[in-house]
Length: 335
Image 1 (cartoon, rainbow, N blue to C red):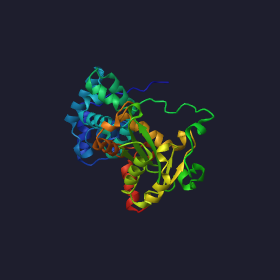
Image 2 (cartoon, helix red, strand yellow):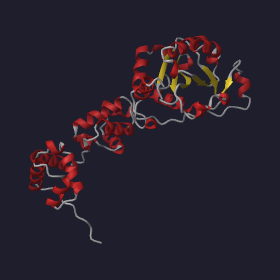
Image 3 (tube, rainbow, N blue to C red):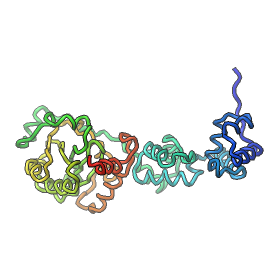
Image 4 (tube, rainbow, N blue to C red):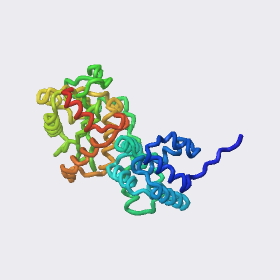
């Protein structure tokens, strides 16, 4: 079978494209005139400012620059400043390459110059020379982690003790399980250096909206008051239940329910997957506050800055919408 040969557009062909665009001739007809595949013409016009902005000289200059860069082994991100600035901005916010790629599609739907693959972003980062930029961008990548806790011994329940009058996760309404109705949260603590400090994390199961709770201490009274304060800022329609592990910090759950109207359900001991949304979110938070962080030395404004970044982060599970966008839509509709 004869192999197909591709040859680059000539200056004459680019002039013909420019004239044809000015005359309003369709891309399909231009392809016929040039004896080119329609996709070749479409890509050429799209990557050079579209039909109204296409200019032969600019297109030729850009093509030469790209060809020269390819010969020198330079990537698109190294060549194209606008695209590079958007990508690095996303990485500085700790967005994953896939999240950046999908956001580019949403925010630049007709601009094909703002397209790149997640593999190309990874390649760009790892071929950078050592330095502060490379260090900063690598920090933005999702950390590898094994977040399953060690298997507990058979007498774990007896060692840890029971929380009085707790409701099991098995008694939780069915609507919580299938995420059909918003307003159901998962919670946990992230503990700091030497277990001397902590922050609370609350995540809404449907929207993935996250609240980082500053804590002065991690005893039951401090946790109850801090959680209640955060939940009381929310519309009642999106604050219905809370699923928590059997940590002693939630031993005042009955008073918490009286204060907020939010019923607390408890996961089984040593079963973090029953709060998988929260576990995943804690992994994202650890990108900002790695193990060994002394949370009593982290300003509240910094915790809330990270909270804003998490809620402004496009999420694959939300079809690359942001938790802020989804929850605001629900509140506008009054759920």
